[in-house]
Length: 169
Length: 164
Image 1: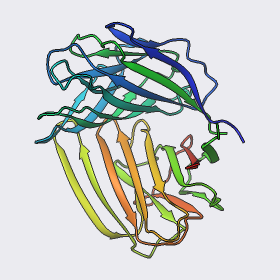
Image 2: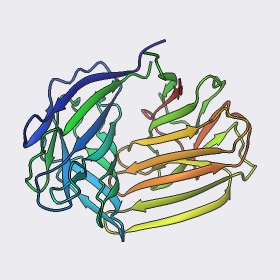
Image 3: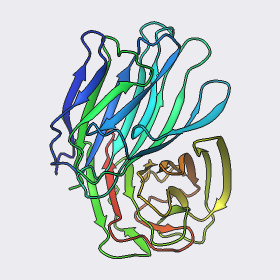
Image 4: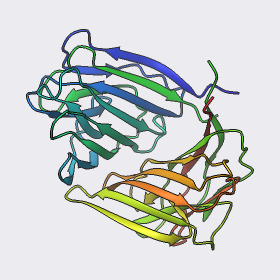
């Protein structure tokens, strides 16, 4: 039986870093899955993070729905394929956000889409649960992924991202 | 390390098609995951439903959804529906749809289905479904809610997950 779920690479911050990136992603899988654990230096209980494909800066669309302990809301943007939450520097110490992003058919000649689920935690008010849909209209295969903080914070030491390849046969 | 995540079947449509069926699903896994990348041939915005064991008349499904359109968040609930909601589809680019069928072969429990439905130009949904039947799921019939076709190029892959 085929092994369909393979770890391609893991990036771990050994000090605060501006981005977590994967390059030269092989085209040998059907889908990609990112599992991300991040905490930001941004001075708040949370920060938004974002995922860029192939260093593209246009052609994106996304929708986000979230709750943060008291209310629910929704947001959108056209700057990146998906955005999610990172624990901020004032949240409970040693607490990291967790995010999963699924990117199907990443080598196809169609537009690329993403589904992401993200949570932060904080032993106080204001922790987030967020679901997001993403789109990038480029028909090029995804060969690189870059995660950055939308509020210009850095990702602290021990932030990690692991990229998995999934085969459908 | 045991292999716990296996592809059962995959379909890429070569022409416009009214439905997709996964039949003879083995009962050897714990959970199923259906990853869909569906396109549509006409109209806008409709839900995609899966009919376990091709049950299109039993009214055994219910679901609760939370969703956002980029401006506001909302929630809805539907009871005594025929299908298990697993996706959203519209004109324009395809979105990622992921549905997890928990304990699908366990004949002691009703079945829970969690779905993430995405159409980035309009909505994102998180949905929990219940199918009130203890029968093992051995097939899945997948259709658009208002009977329009899936467009050529749509893909559907069913994975099996083993607990051990």
